[in-house]
Image 1 (cartoon, one colour):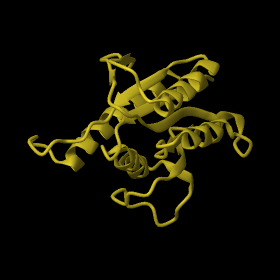
Image 2 (spheres, helix red, strand yellow):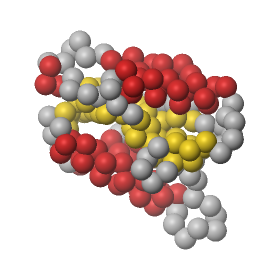
Image 3 (cartoon, helix red, strand yellow):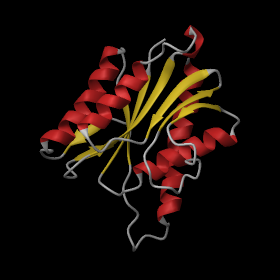
Image 4 (cartoon, helix red, strand yellow):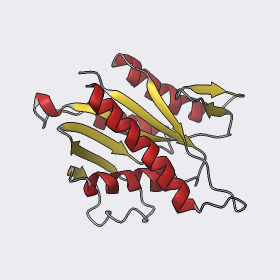
Length: 181
């Protein structure tokens, strides 16, 4: 089974962590089994601490990593995605999700979830993107990108509503991917 890779890209403090924590909360509401997370107190998705989760949802293993600010974070996320030693074959990682911080904002996500560069990124941002894309390529697939932007003070929707909307989009894509498996 190919690993499907989802990347949530965005600038610092735009809501990537909160969106992915909200996603794990939705898994919990849907009776998914959270088999691993690093911080026991961390089920409140409003807490800003990063975390890594392993979830069994519809008999599929999904890894959700809110870490993504540094190159080391991405490398550690990929190691978790690869680590299947404690799981039977039917529960090997099939969907890997990672936050990816970029700087400066010189990349956009197209309607078909591809990246479109609008200028040069800093070396570390470029590495984080390329490392996740290499992992996807090594698994015979491409990263499905989502872009998280911060809700402006002038927008009607709040930051939490913006995060919820992005979370719902990602959950919809996860359900579609699982239905295709």
